[in-house]
Length: 122
Image (cartoon, rainbow, N blue to C red; front, top):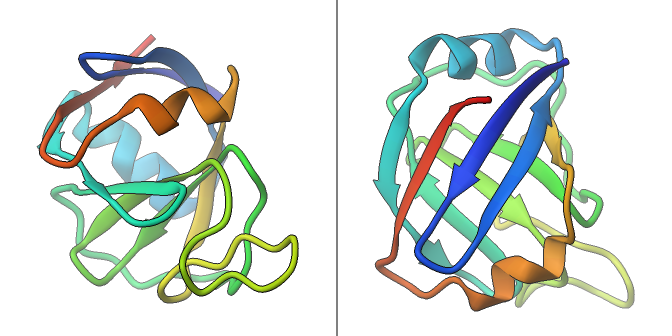
């Protein structure tokens, strides 16, 4: 696992990237700075990576980091989205899970639309 730091104006947290091809390509492109969009209890932001996903997931777990080829974007999931049913967390479209937060996912509820976000190697 590769540790990264995620920083916004209101949140600083570490995460681990898994060993998928997509996660390795994200690691190679760090540091990345982008602008956050919010969607329910998900934040997402554009990243400089265009890849097909190998293991698409329609639902994810709280604290997962997901890569969505549309955008392309990296998503941080900390609760239900507008299309979630019951207790699931459902992205807008299938994502590849590329990592996991190492802190309290609900902290990302403090992050606002348009806020700058930076990812870097820890």
